[in-house]
Image 1: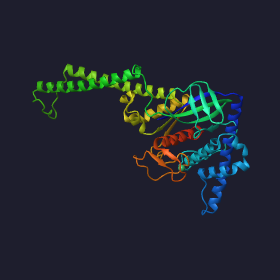
Image 2 (image 1 turned 90 degrees about the vertical axis):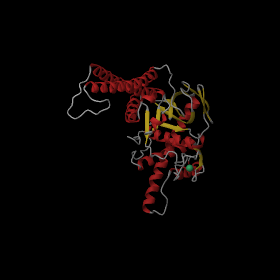
Image 3 (image 1 turned 120 degrees about the vertical axis):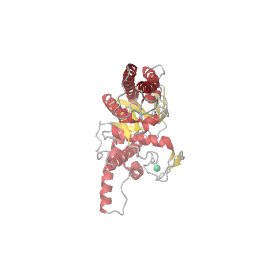
Image 4 (image 1 turned 180 degrees about the vertical axis):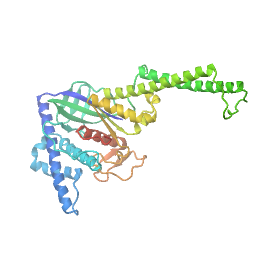
Length: 376
Ligand SMILES: [Zn+2]
């Protein structure tokens, strides 16, 4: 599961100026690439022997000309323009699969951001270290541990934020003492009790049949009425009560899990249908059945919306493992045994899981920029 933590930054004046500049350059590169994309697409329509526009080609093109034409781009991390174009490529990809609108131009002051993906930035305590810039103070420290994949610096209402994407191999742990877990343990006991009561009811039914003159195990002949004993009625009422209690426990566990997730994390990228499997070892998951996934997703979405957070539910057919997170190239096959691979197109080396995680994060990010998520 990939989760993001958004932390307010307290930059000094020099850093503040740098952020503003980097965000401006990212916006410029994005808009430049969008104009080029449209121009090259038109040219390709007129003459299909040429090549279609793509974000890797546009990134190469910008790299080749920026020193001459946009020398001020060199003043900030090269990730700012590069990642902006990759992001545009992602929005186009979503557009072509019908899951996003045609990319709009970025306006100054609207979702100003730049991404640090490939920079070796590090988070330590209350400080994030950014190459070329040094330590920037964070308003709070990271709330959870995991492998830091990348970071995005964005500005809202004149305040800078760092969104760190963290990959968590296991779902977040909850204290055994918490109510939810207690409820679930109780739920398991309730299921055992339910089985016991059902057996008891069958026994009582057999006894009633014998009292009515039938042999043990003999089916009740058509038209014959075997009256229920008082004990049978009592057992039946207990079973009904227990069924209602179990449904409650299940509903509570689901609510507690979704609330916990949106309270602790700012971006939650999940692949549909994999969630329940992902949470298999989570104590709460014992109370949640596969069929609850739709409800899990519904709750996650509305609770995230209430808190201004993002849930990206990625189609399970989205080839997050087969797509190169550096250039967007998709390899035809990626057997599960392949843990590391090299992109045949750009030569980037990938750890299978980290690469998939970065792709999912990008889908989440493009949905944060005002495009509907693939599931919307
Ligand atoms: Zn590649």
